[in-house]
Amino acid sequence: MNYSYTQSISPNQLNAPKQVMVVEPFVFAAASSLIGKYAVIETSRGSVSGMVRDAKPDHIVLQERDSTFFVRLCEIVWIMPDTSN
Image 1 (cartoon, rainbow, N blue to C red):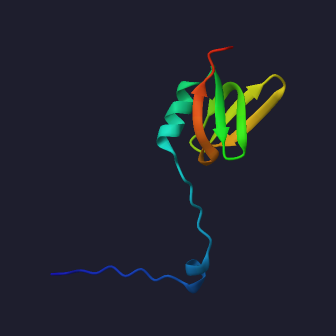
Image 2 (cartoon, rainbow, N blue to C red; image 1 turned 135 degrees about the horizontal axis):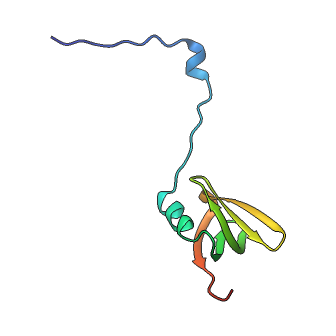
């Protein structure tokens, strides 16, 4: 016997905005492995360098002297450990 499940959806639910989060698992893993180390990060808007302070599934935190940068993972083109520091 076939059972079908029908969920009633109101018209307001069809037009409601939905949150979508893009996760970059390999970029996140690479960023996480560099916590406490210096790195150069190339983004779509240029490069940023500094110590990786934290990594989250959607962003990375870099600190260079007194400046803190929050870079979205979806903007990262490449990451390179900086061995000069």
